[in-house]
Amino acid sequence: MRTNASFDYAIVRVVPRVEREEFVNAGVLFFCLERRYLACRIQLDTTRLRTLAPDVDVASVEGHLAALVHVCSGNAEGGPMAKLSQRERFHWLTAPRSTMVQVSPVKTGVCPPPGHVVDEDVCDDLKSLVDAMVARVIDPIPTDHSAMLSSASSRR
Image 1 (cartoon, rainbow, N blue to C red):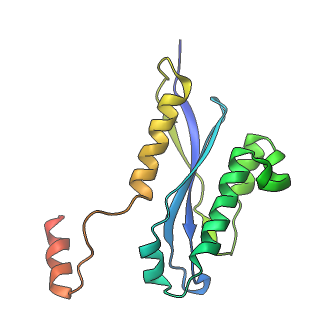
Image 2 (image 1 turned 30 degrees about the horizontal axis):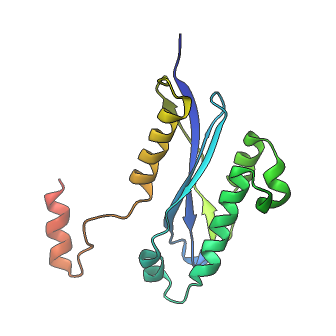
């Protein structure tokens, strides 16, 4: 009998000015011990990032985000941390930092029992997290005050 599996995840954030505590969600770290699954998905919205910090070095930020992916996947390009076990890598990646790339506190969830392919459900859960927490918002942000008020009241 197959059972549900718990997973842990954290949102990867880019904080261009740490002192202001403003951030853009840029990805998700996802770890499921029971299924031996560790993944990192990055989807940086550079337009939003430049809105918070027009002078940000996007190439540098993308380099730091790529390093997270290398460590997560265990690639040699991830350096010594990439050689750790999946659990150790997840905990290292989710350790609190006061740098431009940070992660949220770790949260938990539950994966439904897998079908014939073990990674299929986990990948669906991860895609859902990326879509919900990181993917670009389709509705444009209103630029004038009256539009913001009407938009807020229409959501109630």
